[in-house]
Length: 214
Image 1 (cartoon, rainbow, N blue to C red):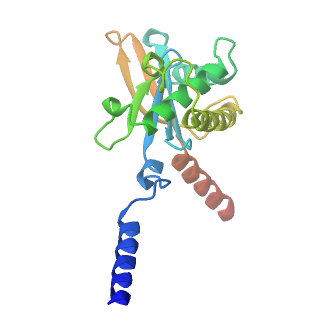
Image 2: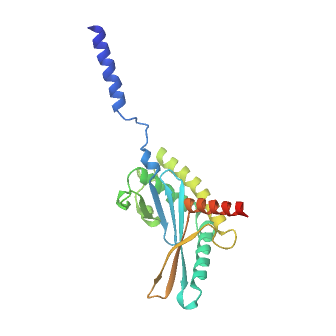
Image 3: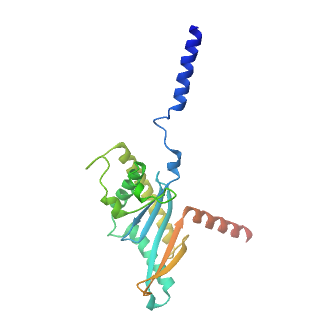
């Protein structure tokens, strides 16, 4: 009887450990979720994962319709915006890192559910994230915020390198125009250009195939 009782208690403990989720476990789905931060004044949207992996860079190029050759002018405008985004004097690297870091931290803390789409991905502007209260209060510095800041800093380095590669040849490289439209009663032509890891991989694959055939 004693052996049976001990065996029964041991079985309960094993079942209990199996049922109780690990406190250190992280929802695996969070790695797949995407977070888009739109830097509205710069006309650039950065999309990345909750863990700080760069997914895509989107930029809006504009041209006055009356000037003609609007596609070339819009592309030049897009390239100028990308260059200014990472090197311009009016752009603060520390602000960009802070905005991305706060976005990552708030997303992981489920503070941005109001900005989620049907797929659970989040789209927010830089001004919206700056308008939200700091998690934990003013000047709060937690382990979570420190981790998010490190992820944002690493992501910013990748963004700078990627944009440098995109604009290195004096034109947009590895970028596709995904749509265009008109504003102000047709007076302004707008083109939307996107770089993404998937597009880059596809471009490199095609390039390698073409080189092998030569």
